[in-house]
Amino acid sequence: MADKTFPIGARRAGNDRLLLAVVFLAGIGTLGIEMVMPRMLAPFFGTSQPIWAVVIGMTLVYLAVGYRLGGVLADRRPDWRLLFQLIGWAGLSCAIIPFIARPILSVAQGALRNVAAGGFLAALIGVILLFAVPVTLMAMVGPFAIRLQLRQAEDVERAGRTAGTISALSTIGSIIGTFLTVLVLIPTIGVASTLFLFAGFLVVLSLIGLRDPRGLLLVATVALLAAAYQLNTGTIKAADCRNCRLIAEYESDYNYIQVAEQEVTYASGTVDRRRVLILNEGLALHSIYRLKYRETGDPLDLLTDGGPWDYFTVAPYLYPNTNPDDIRSLALLGAAAGSIAQQFLAIYGPDTVIDAVEIDRKISEVGRRYFDMADGTAQAPYFTTYNDDARYWLAQTDRQYDVIGMDAYHQPYIPFHLTTVEFFQEVKAKLTPRGVAVVNAGRPASGDDRLVNALASTMAAVFPQVYIIDTRFSNAIVIGVNQPVGDGVVNFIENAARIDIPALQLVMYWSLYEGRFGPLREFTPAMAQFQPFTDDHAPVEQLIDGLIFSEAGKIVQ
Picture 1 (cartoon, one colour):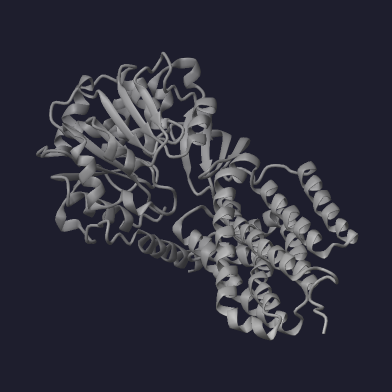
Picture 2 (tube, helix red, strand yellow):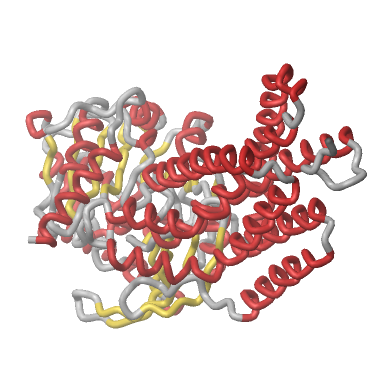
């Protein structure tokens, strides 16, 4: 009996080679589409570990469903043409995603923004709606290909080898698809164009297998969809802050980046314009630059009216008899667009050594273009930016610093390896004898102190004394001193009385008398509510999820 699963007249060996090639190429497409998921979710829900858990978990669900459906369908209709039709439909469904992604994700974000674990649940819904069809269809290719190769009785004797070969080829294709998407396509052409490229790739693959000129209609459809999307593309999303006007947006290897101009009235009554840096889901401002500073050059005009950036400059004054001339160097882990570094330069002078670490090179470029970040210029010859992972960079440097500041904590989640005893031991080793470690710790508007307490408890296991400054925002600044300072609050008050730099005087006054949740205070071991975090056990995500649930419960009540 003639084999009807393949085109009439085709040789089996040639068809087998084509089938294996299809499996390999489908593997590229499957993981390529998966790697687009987190980048599409980032502007709405961030890039935290729970979001990655959604992406990976739902992909595995789609793969499991696709494997099952593919096997059942292949047993019922082991037809070569049906396999390529599935690939064609996967490509077409992929081309539709850019059109429906923004409204679906916006609605999901808005509906669940203030609900318990809202980002996680909204991302889950978004992924289910957007990527279920193409990934499930692509998962059907593997079992379908195995069934087509086992089309004669004698083939059963090599079923294991056949299944192993197809699985291996699919996996190798998936590896290539992963790195090609992340390292080449998204940085070069962006998320939407990457999806259209994969859509066209899958449709063309389908056309080759079907050998039907009518399949050109699918290719033309994808091309028209891509062209229509490019003609109607606006911003990915509006800047999510009050009185903000979006002036630029970028997609980098790590983040969705927005730059906005904002008109703001400070608590002091001052009204001016400032530039703000917004990352990913927009839960926080990561840098602020007041444009008035361009005109005045006055350090006071760099202050953000009590935002967390303002307090890094005053941390060393917990030591007795500290003068501005004693502060000569800063290592900043998580530089963003340069707010803290610019304040240090303005207050302590251009000869200050500043080594700023920002893992995202694009953010550094944005800082230079929109925030007047002066690294490497004649105005700041000792200000250098390193685009690297903060902990890795710290381990490699052989310098010691008067201040090591840590502001690498993307809201709402924190990279766990920057919260542990081992990390703070590395920080302490790179401090000068009178150095300080300064951490910007987030806190919900209600004042729930659990995250602040956990970080302070961990730092207290490394530093002889730990102090907390509550900012005029919700944030807390946690400071570890490299050697005992006695009564740091008294030292701070005495130093404040002697210093004649207005910007420092103002921030020290805020620290002592206008903290949102209290004045400058020492954190003692008796106040610790958590065991110190370690590289082996740092349940940061669990802690923050607890904060999210608590805040959501208050909203519901």
